[in-house]
Amino acid sequence: MLGLCRSRELVSGPNPQALCTAAAVVLGLMFFTTLGAQGLTLNIIHNFTGGEDGAYPRGGPTIDGVGNLYGTTEAGGGAGKAGTVFKIRRRNSSWVLSPLYAFTSGTDGAAPLAGVIRDSNGILYGTTSQGGQYTYGTVFKLRPGSTAPTTVITPWIESVLYSFQGGNDGFVPGSDLVFDPEGNLYGTTQEGGAYGYGTVFKLTPSDGGWTESVIYSFTGGADGASPVAGVVLDNSGNLYGTTPNGGSKSNVGVVYELTPSGSGWNEAVLYAFQGENDGAAPYAGVILDQSGNLYGATYAGGVNNGGTVFELSPSNGSWTLNVLYSLTGPSGGNGGPAASLTMDAAGNLYGTTLYDGLYGSGSVFKLTSSNNSWTYFSLHDFAGGNDGEQPYSSPVFDSSGNLYGTAQDGGTDGYGIVFQIMP
Image (cartoon, rainbow, N blue to C red; front, side):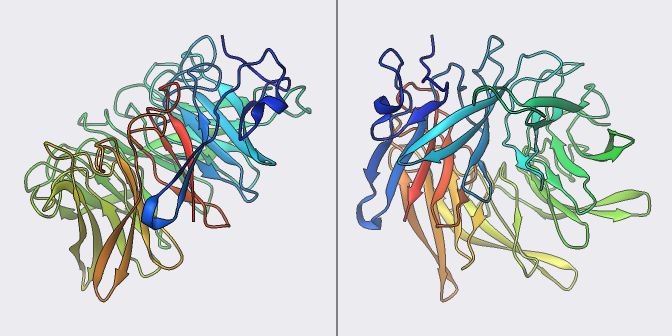
């Protein structure tokens, strides 16, 4: 049985006992380690227990303007053990986790694989890969109740915006969502669609509800197959994304663009991976810089067979791929990034790897550019024990330059962690 504090918050910090009753079980003790020559500190700000706080945080955190973190777990929670949405806030020298919602594996959904996004009103939006009216996944929103909560664990109110039917509309929505300026939502499904190889979909608010439309169905051929990551939007309304399968070269994935055209959308493959030095299997999505260049990563391939970090640049109507860095994989290869990169104001790139690193349990890294070359810095190599393992998520920054992320396994109880890396 999960031990809770008086307020029913899940507390971590140097001295959480002072915040709990004597009978409560202390959760999520902060774990510190200094990262050698880099002079960085890794803080584990929550260890998931597999109980009400959740288990296996695969999606990354979202941060608000005051430094609160929001995220999901794939499992754990209430009686359904179908995953949670949580909030973590700082209280003095401790971090406090409040479960916001526990999925029941019914019509409300189950097993969220991606994180959540926030709108300007603080409402959260996300996807579940299972559950819903037809059991094929949902798009949901989560908002606080209209009355003051009686305890901090008082659940937020969940509304299902769309339940996937498992046919042409797609199923297994496992990606982060993105808003356009008009308030429409975009995401991807890994399966389903007209050809069974996944979709890019749009949800449009209408008459108090939401209408789903498939803006592209992948054929499984040269256009790509089975998108895992979501899409990004440029200032002209074009969408960009990746698929880890399909493509005209070696069936190891593509980077694609979707352009609105009349009442429909046109897909163009910007690059088809060959599975060699250029990389293979881009599970991670792409990000845009202010000049319109795309940055992404591959899970496999590259000179060292641990995946690659790449840049795609537009020029005269075509796109050119430049491999910025080839990561070193674990024994047997593969195991590189599975989540999108993050770029800071100086243009440095940050990411995670699923199995790379000194111990084969994943890593957090930074790439800096100088004189047309990129230098790799390991911010942390996970050892696969109390410090966590297999970070599947993108890192995010707060206003002080601290970096946050999740690892889907490991930690004190083996159910994953939320971590902070301080400069």
